[in-house]
Length: 300
Image (cartoon, one colour):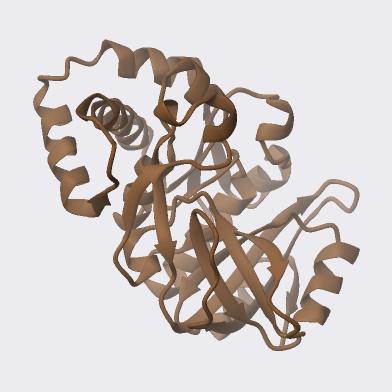
């Protein structure tokens, strides 16, 4: 990962809205973190003229990206377009490979939309973006992108599925790239956060169910106590099992799921995980063992 550059878009510290990481440990592996305060992003977006050609082009891209949910007005979409332009410019100006965004709830309260759609579109265009300013998660996504050439998603290990010991439901609000979904998407409002801050301030969520297919999951984390970077990788499948829930939903079959959960808990990994369509665990294993001196566990 020499010379990788990850953008940290948000306020630090931001209490529960961010996931902690060791910038020093990442820098030791050649990963540079480039921070920007969320207030700077918001201020730049507010100054953009809606008639600007970059905003008009982004509006066209948004309308072509997925089905806009009923009840969304043009002003909400325009806010999202201006935010996307500013974040895209930050990524380009700083030559970033990926980003981690403080996606709630400052941007909803202080600007008026969700960040998910902007993050989804960046991921679709080869610049993965992780939720809750999870910088190590963004790096996990970037590694999956490089290993597979596909757009990774960023999910929560969430609920058990039915009574199966090898199935779980992985969700997010979400910011899944369209090709990661592998199925038609709807662009709507954040549901849970919307109940608190107001749905009119929450346009930009990618909604739908991830289509059936093979997948690879991967997570790295910085371990301050050990002074090391640790990671795990495994493979499974997205299933066609029905599951009624808001946001982006992935029902996953993961062989040895209990062992995976035990490892995550015992080793102190975060609840976030990066996933990509296809089977690429062997590629990840070779890269981490041959070229990077990281603690590593293959989960099958």
